[in-house]
Length: 137
Image (cartoon, rainbow, N blue to C red; front, side, top):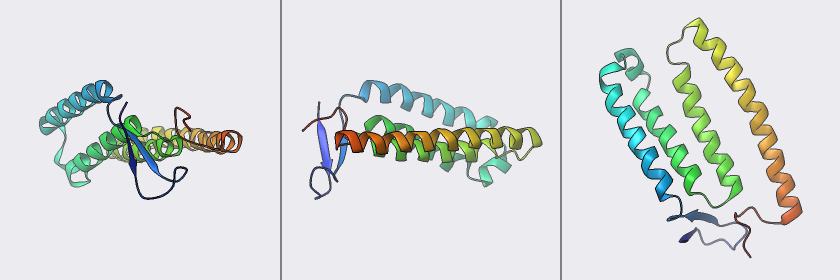
């Protein structure tokens, strides 16, 4: 397993990326993202393109790949939030009533789950003293 340590900070503050262990999962994600982008060229209306459909799609894919690569549970939370912001923005692009009702439910559930996840991360750090996974010295 190849671990890339980013930054000049000592071990508890450095960012860790696991480069080789998640590549088999990232390839199908990349293929799916590419297929979605190609399909979107014909099916996405010009109105959605003006509101940033393609940058949001790429931000969503960046969140997925960042979550796959991270070696730190807090950074996993950050990448989940990037993914959620992009998915929320894609969800409300139509501006129709049904989309807005669904978006309110979606955001409410995500706020509750994100708060629970962040609380669990804080408790884990308090108990173990590290957020790297697997917990390595």
